[in-house]
Length: 374
Image (cartoon, rainbow, N blue to C red; front, side):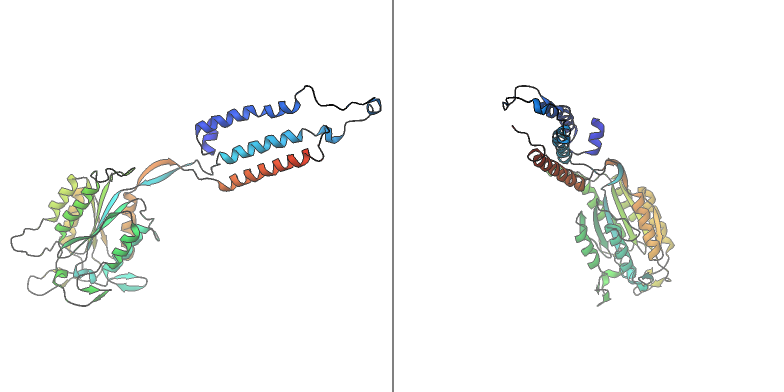
């Protein structure tokens, strides 16, 4: 009885026991109604003429009054107990920290992806799929419970959006992300920054952001917890190509990945090679070849993923990119059993209206057809 009450009503076991005790006391309503004892009487010289009269249907059905009162009390208890429409078990996602590491070098302007029936830049396709991944559109379910941030890199690595639950702001920053020298999807000038890919720097910066999400940076915030799982999604269309700064030795991507692995960060790598043939980017004999399939870059990305326990994916078009994000979405969802309850407002309203109707009916009948004199 108590278990059934807990499964179908909200207040909890204490209220359930109180209600059960009240149910047991309900017969007192009937005892009071039928109690014997001295009553007010009207004296007559003789009742002999009345002895032959039969009991009327009103006297025989007078039990309706305490029945209505009892039913009204029960209905009010049901309304106060907040009936629940659930109680079933279902799976819920546990929030994790995800850092999107996005290549914004010049080769990401290659328009060999298709979006909405039109050829678009690789960057535009990636931004759209990433937005769908975060907010949940189409085949992607969304990551409502996750801390998500974004790191971009070309010559330099930057974090335009730190880890956040404000996915609306993240969406706006993703839409504003551009290749150096480009504005609103159009190239307005040649920018030296677009000719480099600081892959190692980007992994280091994203690792630091994710590391801090695992520290007790939320201390003092009631109910807040550090992220229990941290994931990096690295998307690029070429090999590591850092700028040759004098006196500076850039970190190698594989070394940066090993550091991430020691911190428990898993890296998923995506090669957005598209379908265009390779072409030389920049000027000079040693200018990098970018734009199409690069076996050196692919080997490096496979090594990064393997070193951290992640996976490597290759995207050649928008559909394959959606499939990859869907696969990552499936792999990085933690499931925990949880009982779901939802207030059944309609049932509560019906119970309250029924109680009101029965109480009004009792008052009306007690003062009309079932009225007793004295």
